Image 1: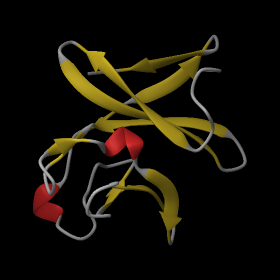
Image 2: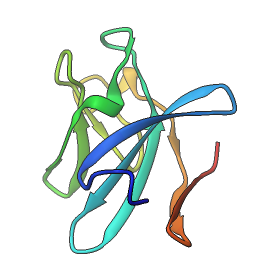
Image 3: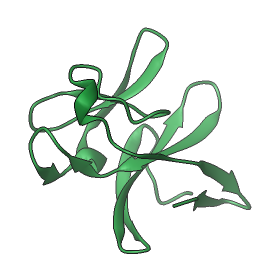
Length: 100
């Protein structure tokens, strides 16, 4: 957990799939996991996006076209048909666990 800078993401290869994992601090430490592939730009870049919020939603903005993806659901706010997978993620014993 200490290896992920707060309010940023990293990419992990889990069961052959690229997963973007985000460490978010909004009063508490939380982690989120979504697919790393951005269908809008056709590139695996979401882990490098900017983390923020839109209203009540915690989102990442893709670094290429700036589409926003909800970190809890994977929904692309600008183009819902281009949403990505979201995975359950949790912190336990100082490690991040992701269910893929």
